[in-house]
Length: 230
Image (cartoon, rainbow, N blue to C red):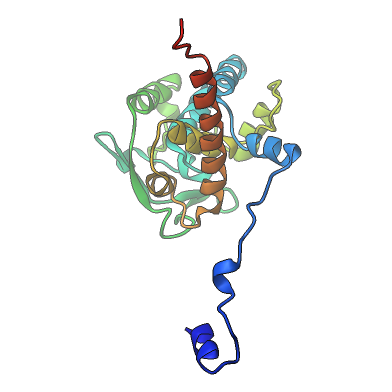
């Protein structure tokens, strides 16, 4: 509108905007590899869970649950029995390690409800059975540690460091892995963002675009294998 006005007043002879082209940013090989480090491939995830089960079965169940839900670590360990109804989980808080208590979620987008797959329900049923009745949390937290409180992120990260992996393992990688898994399943970006509680699409889109790019390459590889002449 401003440029049209400038042309009408003969301040400009033509509108330059239609001729402006924005070059697509080309990632270097190093940048592409860094993107891949943000999440685990399905085969890598299976191996990490398997290796963790040898170190500590409870932690293995915890990281498997995070991979299948996309929850932040604090959200995951703040889950209480009352937050689950049928197969729906209401994420209404996060665990604050400083105050050692459950607090509100990161933002309004983080307060959400998600549907749990069957395996997550199995994990919830299996996890408390590892502890004697007197050790089960009075507040009915699911993922508790020896002190009858939710797991500490430092404990989980220290155990992850014991696993021999090419990726830099931390609790947050499982959240990114969940985004990658949903992308592979063809779930729309908006639905993924709602499930993981993202209001800023930057992180989700970064992983989403990289995975879809890899999927496109796989399509070409499969097409190249088709021989219609023989």
